[in-house]
Image (cartoon, rainbow, N blue to C red; front, top):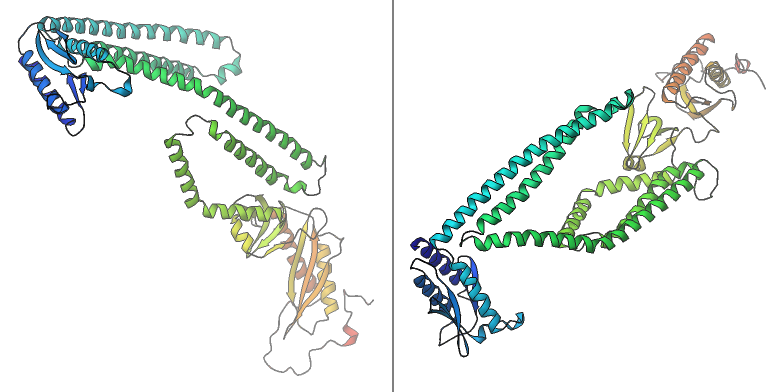
Length: 520
């Protein structure tokens, strides 16, 4: 009893001191709130009244045995007595006007709470220990029974699953593995078992704590807290159902609209319908942009109806995500914008042969953030779209009609070789090369008259569209040019000036049309 009294004093002094600086003081006995003092009585501040009441109760409960509290009317308030001796006084000014309380209700609640706190006699403690032992045995027995039940259910479920699997054909048995079924069933039953054990342990803890005066308030509040939490979650779910229904309707409409747009873009891509502002080559990126725009619009419309969208946590996460995107996605947005510009400006298409800076090859993929090309050696190059947009792009496939690409090569021959002969030899070498189209006919242009030699540019059109055949075509064309020049005795050499020759390096008119050139 002395131990309980000292615990009471320590607890109450700490409680009273915590409210010393306020206009009210709460009197608590063994963690149970008794009454709140809000007024000054006989010159005593609420804190002083609570301190005196605590000391008085501690003195009255020093004697062993049963103690009983009651209320006696002492105008204008009520006097609370323990075993016929006054403990504290409740004034009408102690009533909280905002709680719609009355003096009678406050007094009744105080007497009831005080009697519950004073029930700590030796007999009550022994009864509490007995109930605790009984509740512990029941709890342990329930856990044992639950484990036995789980094993039995697991065994029957596994046998049932194996029987059903035996009825399947060989393909079905291969698709559904027994070890995976056993693992899934075992984990599911373990989860349910632990959930039930946690609920039983929660109830057991509440019963145990309710048996002792010091922990009784906590035990009484455990079940109330659990049921309150369940009711709160249930009510929140019920309140969120209409908003969730609206959000689901918005997403369903967005999905339906996106499906309709996909069908429309399929018709445009298959050229079933023709639209002046949308080419078939632009259907892919336009489809992605339109679908993303539809879902972003649907998300913005459904956002207010999502559960928790108005909470501070949800707003904080939204701000954090926005800040991360704004700080880390600047270059990403620039790449995407460059990709859109390249796509809709129609600089190139998939399958075309291009040259970007010092890189050339056939386009294999047009991405939003990068462009991939494969050169003649079969090496795949990934070029950022911002680099592509800032570089000069040469498209060798755009000028041709149909499949294929432009092939060009340059040679420099001295002025003493007739230009007509050089043009004829280059055209003959092009005709000998497999893959070079005879129509349109290969052409030769004199692109420059340098100090020591003219520059000849052979331009022709080839059939292949793959990167490696183009490299093979170029290899064969260069080989044929060397063969043709060797056959006609013309050196592929670019002379440089070192001194005046003995005679002028000019072509006499009789040699203007040397083979394979022919006069007009």
